[in-house]
Amino acid sequence: MISVEVSNRSGVEVDDSGAVELAGRVLQAEGIDEGELGIAFVGPEEMRGLKRDHLGVDETTDVLSFPIDGRDDVPEGVPRALGDVVLCPQVVGEEWRWPLTHGLLHLLGYEHGDGMDERERELLA
Image (tube, rainbow, N blue to C red; front, side, top):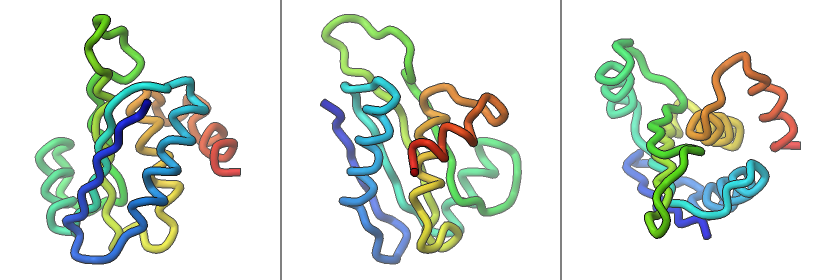
């Protein structure tokens, strides 16, 4: 079972149940049926701070991923901590499904250019 914790610190209304449902579908399609996932919706200033602190780039962005276990083996009995996907609704706008899918694939080890764009299209079709 995938356990998803959603946090909304963005100051705007978000479709958290839709985000949980999409995350479950993407992870199952990628063969992940157990684990813990965090999804956070944050405002532009918090997103800018995260990108600056973690990537050294002082700008706001749509999505950031903070992987933990990904697809790595974990000891038996220890829950898989997939990591966190952070989205900024003010940057993403109404179309949050692609950035969330993009962030989830990064948690699972995908990198830009590894067929990631094609996989995103397949998952969102």
